[in-house]
Length: 228
Image (cartoon, rainbow, N blue to C red; front, side, top):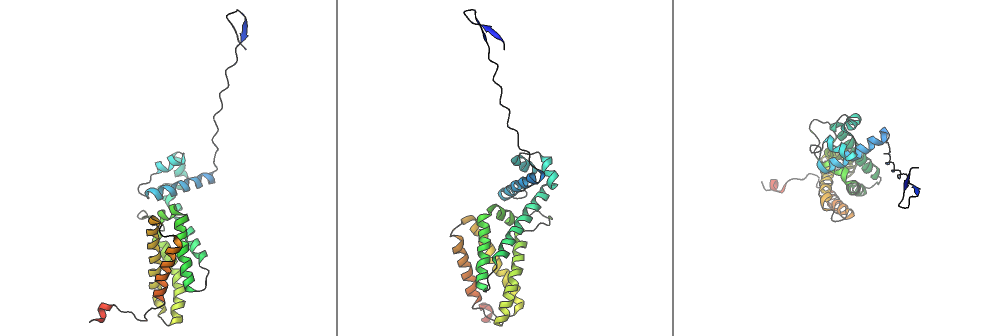
């Protein structure tokens, strides 16, 4: 240790400079972990900005990686978007399919409405991704295609119910599209307002749908047509 002289002429050791703390090493993610991080980042950005307004640069910056890392995992923005949408489609369909356990048609309507509203409430970013327009020519599933899949499930339920009541079962497809469309559009509205609570919204949706269905005319006509 070096020494210096003090005013009295005696020599004293000079303490060595304090060692600088080592910078904390960044935890290296596995390829699978990095992929999940990028999917979560893309999901959030696509929900906030939509597909067109989101760039690979933004995804990379928010994930704190370089652009080539994103390209390496997904090939580009379209690839990342397709993965995000596919996951949301499966999550929503699984939630609705799992919810449909009752035997009575009215209870099934309630379960479907609550499943969709529950998804909107708990997975808001995912729902925003689904209801935004997908890029042209992408072939990616959209919210409309998801609702169409749900409508096909409802169609089978309504078909059996129509047949037992003496209605034309061929009309089940029309009514299933109408019912699911009503719930889906109400869900998009509720996404922004969040009032009243989802149980109340579901109850009113089912009230309109069920009380309408329970008093169906076998061969409805428009009132204006009856006047001629």
